[in-house]
Image (cartoon, rainbow, N blue to C red):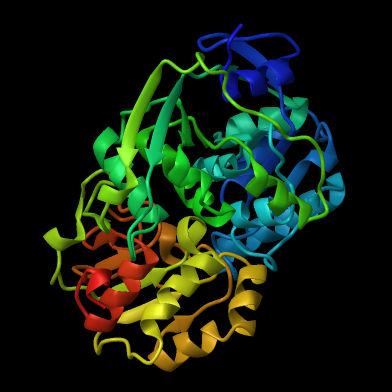
Length: 414
């Protein structure tokens, strides 16, 4: 039977050959919980049993409200710390950064695994060839108790992307282009498999950006076949093995094709992620705040792209530029290579690794009537602060160029 990557992963998890449309109870390889969704998952677990099924397969991180920005957040942190200690599970606490970045960079995700996280952007891990998907807190509680969860094996929607991205056109522009084309419901409960020469030549950081936003078009996961780039990334973390995994030639029935050479810097306008236009359509739009960071674009490669524009420049008067590396590792890399000097010299505020203003928690939220430009993944009403604020989404290069000019700017003009 010809199978897709996703069907192969589920077959391995279930212990028999399965196909798209089958309902299966699948064994979980890794489960991730964080400080926002964790408490309810723990409550659900204790309604079923008093122990997690396998403490070596559960990872905990704090990132959404870090450091704790309220008494409620502090209480959640305290309770989750107690839970982690009692259960003997690994808790990175507040030290490491955004959950999705840390899970990948610390080697907790491997090709061919079935991974769940109590966060919708868990699909990011598909950059390594894992079937990774977000689940609700109640489902997570069940999985913590049993090590299994029910799934409908998804159909695969393939994206064949070829050609070279032009100057200052990035993986973020690529995925915004696709989301704008497909729409927020265009890939509902499908496995979005990204391939082609463009993806093959991407590093893991950019593959993570692409897979991260599969959920923004309704995808159950985003996934990329593991290859030499994947193997090298894992070898750097002292992880070896045969991770050969690809979809069989005739297994995928739906393929959409894109030419990377035709892509341009894109922006998602308020208040939907699929409200995507070329940056040239919104050049000159007033902005109050620029945010560079998040699980979508907070990696060193993103920071470097921003620094190339910000070096020797000054953030426009009246604009706040907030930069938050996705993890401590990425922060240290930026620090050692001089990027932090470039950022602080420009007038940017550089914060410790966390989600920051991405979901309207912690710091950097927008006030009524303000306009934010963000490298994150969602621009819904109230997502980054006041419901009366507006958020545009873009790439790190577009964000940096706009912070310099004080209005939304085409990065190719710098």
